[in-house]
Length: 245
Ligand code: FPP
Image (cartoon, rainbow, N blue to C red; front, side, top):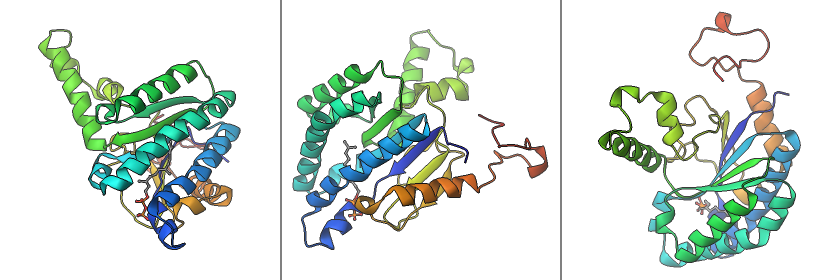
């Protein structure tokens, strides 16, 4: 089976998973760490280059204060507890999103985790926290505009490659596969630019129930898709559809 270079996952359904068990929503988020570990291990084992997880959106700040606080504590705890194991697995961890909205403590902790794993050559794991696809595009536009204003860049030199490099995932290949659990069939402002040619796999599983078999089903779905990148079927190379990579 062709191994994708970059998998993105919207981890949805934690709240419903907890409600079905009469538990607080925070218990669902906590249970969501198990499939996170599984996906990291499985992607590493398969030789996937990059895995990007949507953990907290720009819009999630509007949830009840208690839930936001419990998610922030979970991120603090998770980074603290998991980083040694991720490092052992040679995973390079990065966080994408508007980190200025995070507490100073969480900002410091994620910066330390990034620094600690920066030299690792295994899976590139991106955790999106306080992230929105539109925010990402705006921050990239702002960076380029500032460079133009200072005279370091000419507007005519802004092309797709230069724009992509200014995005949070600059330097990584586009996502080949976007998985969303929890039954909704929406993008919900995740990685808008980087999923331009991604295959979309929507799973009815709630995120805490996402397991190895469901990840395999998503990969089989991708393997069965013909990726044409706007070309006709006849223009594609015989083996694999890697034309635009
Ligand atoms: C969406 O489910 C899930 C979240 C907002 C949080 C996801 C976070 C984790 C799984 C923890 C991962 C942590 C790290 C550090 C990678 P929902 O609450 O919208 O569920 P619902 O649709 O059933 O209400």
